[in-house]
Structures are given as structure tokens and as C-alpha cells.
Image 1: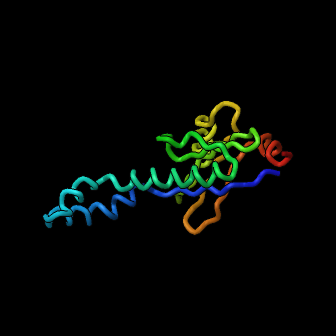
Image 2: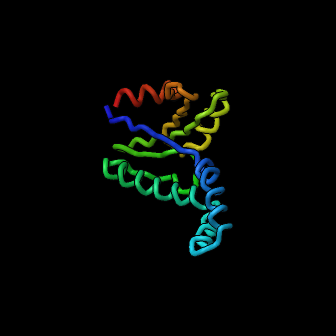
Image 3: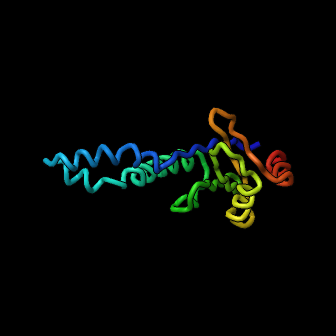
Length: 141
């Protein structure tokens, strides 16, 4: 049976929401850091995502996974191991909308891949939804 990889996501908007006021204050104070602070407002989250993606690629590709599909594609992951491609749509919300999320996962999955919907509520267990036929394929590998 192939190894199972854990997927984590983070909310980029929360980074800018936290840092933009601090950067705005620095920009308003003037001095040598003011211009740099102005340029960074609204940009830290994207820069963080780019660094996180590079680290992710190094870790997963180093473990033998082929990684693709994350460049500006949103909140999903596509990995390939021994020819099996898994497309995972990740959600973290309090109100569950599993049928709606499943349609998105299945629609966004590349042809021939196994769509997986992974979700959790706050302080809840991470759960996944997969087609029964695909589950049988995954377990029998």
C-alpha cells in the first residue's frame, strides 16, 4: 500500500490582516524603513505562500512524489506516486457543505485522477470523502 501524505493549508489573508496595520504604522513613522514598509503592505501573504510552496515541493519531490497544479490553482493539491494521481480539495469551515464541495473537487480534478475532498471543523478531526470505486482502487494498491 502506498504511503499517505498529509495536506495542510493556511489562510493567506490572515497574514496580511495581521501584518498590514503594523506595516502601515511603520510607513507612517517615516525613516529608512518607511518606504520598504509601504511596498510590503498587502504582499507578505503571497510571498509567504511562494516560500511555503517551494518548501512543500522540495519535501514531496524528495520523497518521490511528482507535484504539480499548485501554481495559482487555489486550495488543492495534486500528487503522483507510482502513476496514481490524487487531487485533493481542502476545506476548513464550520458549516459543512459536503455535496457542494464534492462537486467542486470532482469538477476540478484532472481527468484520470482520484478526487478527494478533505475537510475539518474547528477542533475537529480531519476527514476525507472519496468515491467508493476509487477507495477500492486505493486500498488494493
